[in-house]
Image (cartoon, rainbow, N blue to C red; front, side, top):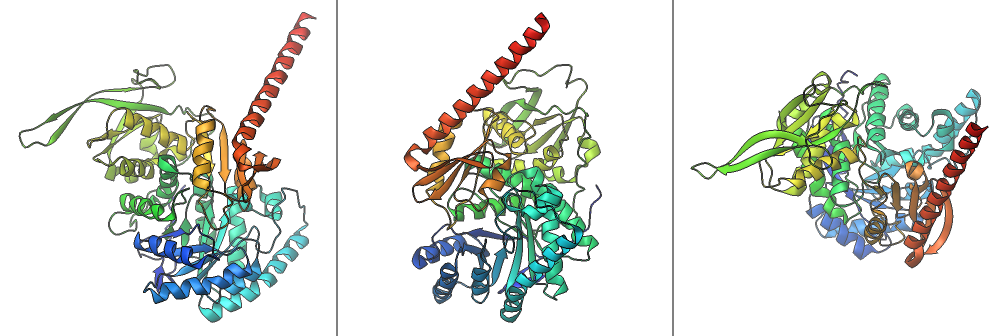
Length: 550
């Protein structure tokens, strides 16, 4: 795939300018009840003081939308002029109220004019499909008129987890479906003369997120549209894993020149997202906050090509020179799950190039060089969190594209030994290049969350970490839950105060379970399903043996 030279238009969101050659902007979202003015104002201030340039608040109903006026007034009286954004799902009336108050409104094409996805095929003729687009245009007109009058910006925010049945029937729950969903709305706004727009393609899967954004940029360019792009992973999780998966997806696109604003979605206090976003931008884009020479998107390996990602570590000797500077003497490349020398017929050291790169060189490396290479980035970092973010942001593009045969991270700073091996495995896990433990999807907290999400994530992880390769989703509410869980084996979703729905795939099989019992019920469901699969496998084997006996 060739580089698409994409530079967006510059737009205004209150006093904030975004797009063009301006630095990539950083934002976050509150997790307070929007009806709680004091708590919301306090959290907005924490986000702003951490460096957030825009703050988003959920407005699930008209009452919450109306209370944005109180929150904004108190922030302005306290001297904070940072623009606010209302996050809208399912409720156009709330969007129209919020658009008169805040500087930006986010709407979701999957549920703004369409009903919640029911995962039922909605076969439409071409005339019926076009009639649906006209219906959507009519539903959007009041919002456009209000936003034009008040100077309010709009984000067209597409989530992999909440495409409409209309889109999924025609395009599937795919990157193409996401891009088409956004383009339909963008064209309606553009054709009505409204251009104060931002657009986003989000998924909890890094490959889907990257591919949908690449498609979006290509389709916008073909349509002569150059609206700013908002980047983020929908449900990144928490801790190191959340930082790594966010850095891998966001860093890949920033290195290609796509992205005008970033939100890192962690299942943690929202102000903790800001330094992570800033570090991703810094390591990829440098002090200017904007990549000037985009890297070419790496072509994915074709089906059947050799791809055996392995983790390697360098055995190094540490010494000090006369000035006290640390000297790193690299000896031998070793690897494998147990740290042993990895030599086999699939990927041998004799036949595999070691591509050693200083961190600043990584974003310039092209796909041809990366093939059949063990990528060996060299860092100089003492802070484990920064090292994790930097490594994922710079390396994610290689493994999302399924490129190198192996990964060896060398660090000249204090982080050494087993920590580097764990980090390498985490990068492969985040890009789904190699799965070595349980995979988790967990959403960032927001005002719709039905329980203490941070505690729920910790509890579910502690109880299910032995289930290697299984994907488990922990969601605060049902806005994205069923759709984002389409790729998950099981889901643990807040349903009401103190109540949890347990999902198998996209089906809620246990509803309104008391939170105190929910983890045990989830584990019982998994155990029962695994036992059932084992019984079916045994029956199949016995049947096969009977047939042979005959």
